[in-house]
Image (cartoon, rainbow, N blue to C red; front, side, top):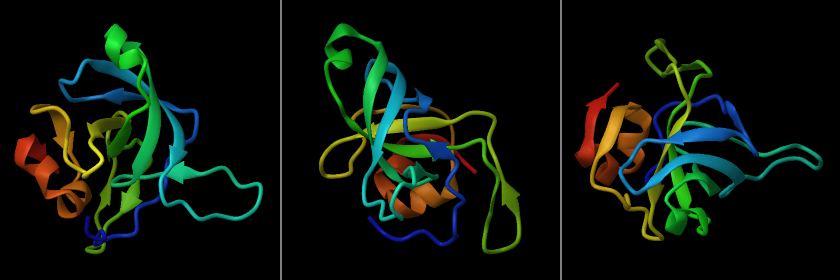
Length: 132
């Protein structure tokens, strides 16, 4: 896992429901915590593109609903600025489930993936259809 090249605005709160865009059997996820977040007292943790989150499966197969997997945020609605000056935003919030070794659990990703995620997790970029 490498650092990202841009400073991404964190646009996803804890307890937010986001879409799961891989073929692992989960459809909708609820963000429960952000891994590696160091904040101020009484401040809610937030996640952005490329961040690892712990989540619970809200909608999906019965086996997946019992798990609390880790996921990587691959799209967010909140606009952020890249280092070259361009602003990027997507039409939905989405994540991909990963293993403990930061490799994707599925073998197919539906939709676009942000470039910041591919820089940080090259394995996700290998199975992504579109990188923006």
